[in-house]
Image 1 (cartoon, rainbow, N blue to C red):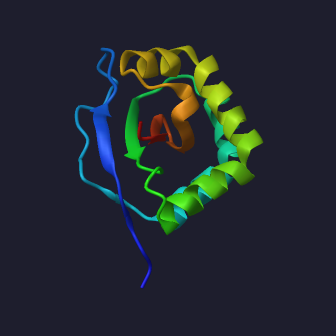
Image 2: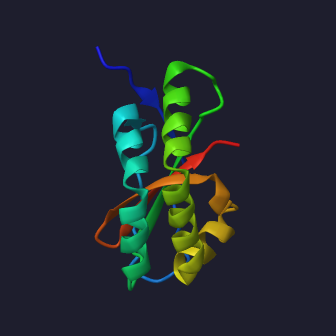
Length: 131
């Protein structure tokens, strides 16, 4: 049986106005650790996609507790460590995209705590280390 990591959503959707933003997000989702690790391994590609984004429709933040020291959190931290350069490239891309940067700042999310992102059209799901 594959283990699952329960991840809670941190502040649903960041919306700074405008009708193009999503109105709601479900909470209490479970994220498969293998999916999170695969997303970490794609950090460089996601950074390039973010750099090309013209508009951001919605941002969903998924808070992940990687400090528990259990097998799953160690696997995620190991993937971040193995892909450190690409994760930093991803963080830079997020910081350099003004619309994303503003929304993250508004929610008090430090870019240094972001370790993975999925991009679906104009929607981002951002994985953030729980402080």
